[in-house]
Amino acid sequence: MILSDLLRRPVFAADGEYLGVVVDARFALDGTRHQLLNSPRLVGLIVSPISRTSFMGYERTGVRAPALIAAWFRRRERGSFLVLWEDVASLKGTTVELRSRATLHSPRLAGDGRVEG
Amino acid sequence: MTRHRTPRRRRLDELAPPPRIAAQELDAQLDLLDRQVLDRDRVQTTTVDDIELTDVADPANPDPARPPELTALLTGPVLGTRIFGGRPPESRFERIPWTDVSEMGTVIRLGVAADSLDATWAERWVRDRIIARIPGGTHDPQ
Image (cartoon, rainbow over all chains, first blue to last red):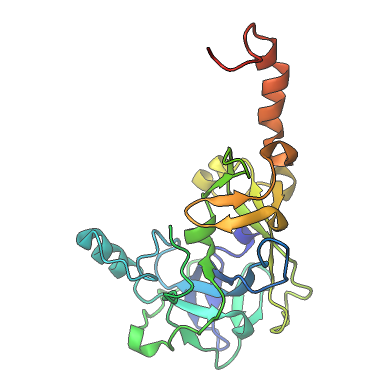
């Protein structure tokens, strides 16, 4: 499977409610151990209710500058959320279906683990 | 393409706080895709066009305890598909195994030489078959 197979998939709640599309995938560097770096493990999917892509990630970081651009993109991406892999019920076909009572998390990246750059 | 009803935008206070993860986190679009890849000698090698994940054994019922892992960075002809949609077939991508990656940051550093990767075969072919046959093409400019 490659990442493009997941991006832009429509996401549905267990009751059939349309929630948005997958715009990104979050990983944690705590998968299989290797000599140089651990394999990134898929933590979850970032879902946006409106836009089909995520640009610059202003809604996920604490970056506030340039103020005008930051405000524009934060507004454009508002309502995005992170859904954990454990809450994914099905990837059948070209959609993503969530488990009942799936938790929708804030998409903010934890400051400690942020990859700067 | 199927059109769906515009979903409700949830306010931040309706969402649970982000999960606490002890390891370094990275978002594929923000931290991996389109990043420059340098080899162990800081030679520009390629850019990341896509990433390969382990397959999900049963997509209709994925195992919550076995999340996919990133296995390779992919590079290939994606310009056309980014403009017009879709994606190139997997056979058109060149793989850089994750085990070759040594450092993540503004750029992605590899622990191996670029010449040892399949991803640079086109550049090596042009160098060896075309540039090397041009007089003066086998040494640095004076």
